[in-house]
Image (cartoon, rainbow, N blue to C red):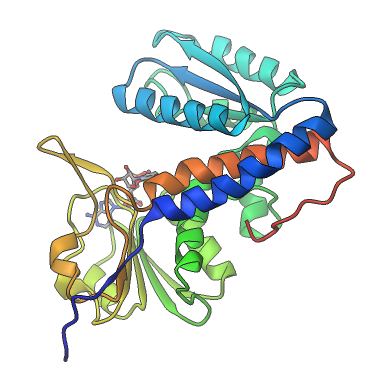
Length: 297
Ligand code: NAP
């Protein structure tokens, strides 16, 4: 076995910049034809510091691109009915193309009930169960942001997916489960590991592409991957004030052929894909006669 330290670093920012550059260039002309800009409503309940950062980043990026944002910051004590009434109002608002409800919601709010209220065509996070069903059947117009971002990174760096064995760690409804479907649609052979999997290493060592999306700092060790594997780290964990992924990056580096860093890997892609979805939703609402382009995205 030969060891290599020339792993390709799969940085997300250049990929996100490219996608956002193309999107930004098209928005002005689209807005001129539609007579209005795309609109994104951002709903934040409570004052969770990480959520505040994410919401700020998303709003800032949207405004830079020429997407109008509608900020709704609600107190942590907001009753379920009030939140659902707000969603109904945003559903009916013709200036709003996408509705982003930042998760997690406070414990007294029934998250599933709120997410089901979001109009299917404005569900830019793709959290509504009907949109998830359409995604599973490969009929969705919008793709979930973080999973779609992972696929975009792999494609951008020329990493072949069809016919490859992909192992995922994590099966959450936001990342692991939808990503397993996107990989399947890309013709990978997919293994999904989770907290009840008996021997995760046995599954990941078989894989050409290993994706960790579990929220456990530095879980994926060098002895859990094969020589030359491609590793994607979706995890974001705070350890002693630092951001670390689900992968033992330094230990994996000499063994893998490519790996995403944390931070700077998948993170920037999530925001970029949210912008892509908002503009797609806008086009469907405001310019329904024009065919969508960039179907792969
Ligand atoms: P989640 O909802 O907590 O799901 C975690 C998944 O990992 C579950 O399926 C769980 O299995 C599995 N898991 C947890 N511990 C495990 C263990 N010891 N062994 C095997 N499987 C285990 O988390 P999430 O929302 O998917 O997020 C995962 C990570 O990605 C987090 O660090 C999050 O911060 C990060 N994230 C990053 C982005 C980004 O933009 N980069 C976006 C979203 C999330 P069970 O199903 O059996 O419980």
